[in-house]
Image 1 (cartoon, one colour):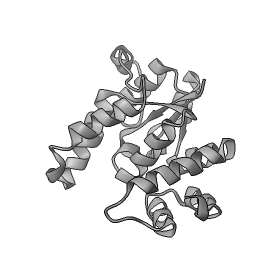
Image 2: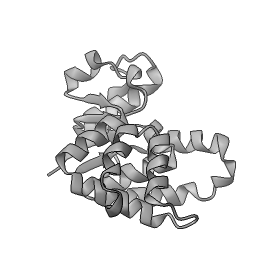
Image 3: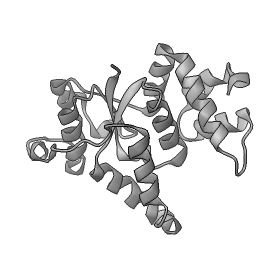
Amino acid sequence: MSFVVLLDANVLFPFTLRDFLVTLATTELYQAKWTDQIHDEWTRNLLKGRPDLVDSLPKTRALMDKAVPDCLVTGYEDLIESLELPDPDDRHVVAAAIRCGAQILVTNNLKDFPSEVLDQYGIEAQHPDEFLEYQFGLRPNLVIRAAKEQRARWKNPPLTAEEYLERLSAQGLVVTAEKLADYLELI
């Protein structure tokens, strides 16, 4: 069985990044996890700039939950108060990671999840680009396949492989895009 990874709200907020992480999770390379509270956080933040998406986000959430079996973490709330983090609002993320046995917490806010706290629970915080680089090292064929699947779904407008990699890079996946560039003909 694959290892468990909790995805923080800030990596689910940008469409391109969320779509890539969820697509890769469907390959069973890793077991992606999140909570309803994480869903609420990323959708709330997205709606601040895109209120026009209010009607489509419940469908997006449901599709994510359906695409990744057993993704929702529950029963973590009792752990929240016992955790100390630089930002108390992030305690629910670590509590969920502990409850589901996550080995990795994928987040753009590494400073908010100090290793001194996470180490005691066997959790490592990783930037999404670092996480994806590691996944590429483990199973490049699955990462390439996920990239191909994601790009194939984008039809309005369709993207060339180069444009697709530029979009990944713009989402902070610089190393991932560089690695995928060697496989342009496959994506």
